[in-house]
Amino acid sequence: MGTRDRRIAAIAALLLALGTVLGALGAHALETRLAPDRLEIYETAVRYHFFHALGLLAIGLTGNAGGSGATRAAVVLLLVGIALFCGSLYLLAFGAPRMLGMVAPFGGASLIVGWVLFAIGIWRARTSHG
Image (tube, rainbow, N blue to C red; front, side, top):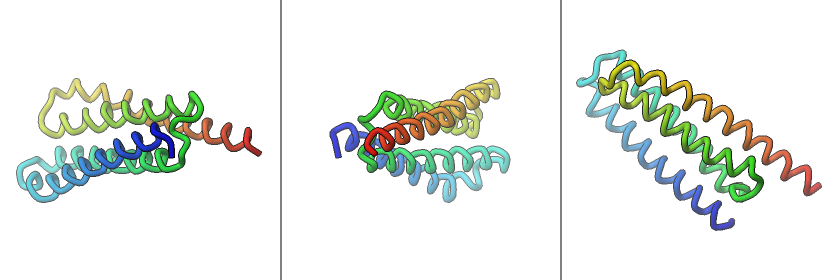
């Protein structure tokens, strides 16, 4: 595992720790403090945060994070996607202006394109090695 792979795995592990803390916060402290619709938004943010952090961990563990330009771009887009998509949902859950909801689709698009680029990077890495 190269330096970049270890860095991505470490960032993913920290994101997973944060997702766990935020999930526990939602389940124990926010359940009675947020309106049901806002709690649902919060839970969606935690779920996507966790899934994509697990995905980043997998990328780091594949040993391909420092590989092709597509794979490196995928990592950046996934990090940006988590920040924009999940971050905007967390803020909306806590009462940020609804206009901030316009950021979420950009984060979602970043997540989608990131996974497509990772697939391309892995495909190219595998086919060029046999």
